[in-house]
Image (cartoon, rainbow, N blue to C red; front, side):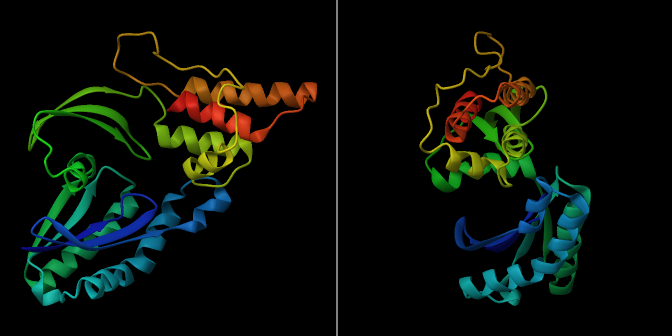
Length: 244
């Protein structure tokens, strides 16, 4: 069975070809247009998906040496995600499936993250715990079987990805914030600044990052007021350590 996968839930246009569980080709187009705004602009994300999705699909088909007529199904992210961005992918997938006379499969974004683990670890057995960390989600799931999941804990406010993006913006770094902070932190001292870590001494399986973001803002305001000499790499490393 050969399946074309399409993902447009946020700011990356991605597609892949899968045959019997093996990834034959995969392409992800990152939307750099959002960098100037320090975050994802939903309307722009939708337009970028419309602009590049067909090209991305064509390229994965070429790389996999597969034709449209050989496809057995099209799988597409149906949510959660940005509504306009999701609609772009869903409408494309529906049109393609109707034109080819094949099935269109709507895939839950969170469920896809969970089962992506089987790509790296095919021997993974149920039940297992899954720490799900993406741009908009930070959760811990107990996975008992296909379709049988229990949410054990999640963030009470910002997700990890949002904490990195907002922290990078405060530090004057580029978007997306995760890679920018990681790069800035490479030569830094992660113990230089004592940023808070929520629920560290609690038995609750939950996360919170809004307090950390606020602590960073207050710290930057304090050193600016006192004209304290600081090293950006130290701040980035300390902030990253508190998140991770």
